[in-house]
Image: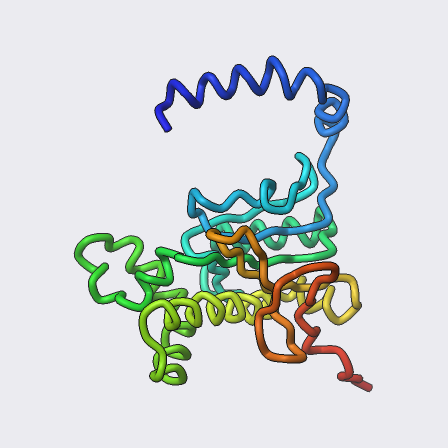
Length: 224
């Protein structure tokens, strides 16, 4: 999209959408109170507000290459700061990690050796924070190849990030208190459908009328 078209879009937004929703934006100017933290990929084909039909102020969004969340303590990343702020200050009730079909980051992860010279920064990001997913897939899905292998990698990556989220003290505390729920989603670009991980079946199933929250690993653990 040429910059000229983007500027035209800005003008159209102000002259049409903003004018007809002025009261909403006036309300938003006094603060935000989203209840969902939506973590997804930087891929230009993914628009969290579009696919969820959410209004401004309803989603707190974190995006990066591969919708990756470094485990707590590995680095003082922007992702970690965003998570802490969303949960501690905004009192987020639900966290969604949403991967997507045809993910370039996951394609790169499966062929990571080819990235070292061409894109060293991307290589470092995936090598440091994607190795758990890569090793799991290579060791356990040797029978898969091509599109099937990529699909498995995308799914396992989302589940890995759920596990990484659970290493954050503020998240473990909220999970333990039943004040927070985690969700693992996959958005399929070519169909517009969203699939959620169902722990009862161990598979991603299409979301229709109800979500599939990831079970709290602390539920049922009673400490004296």
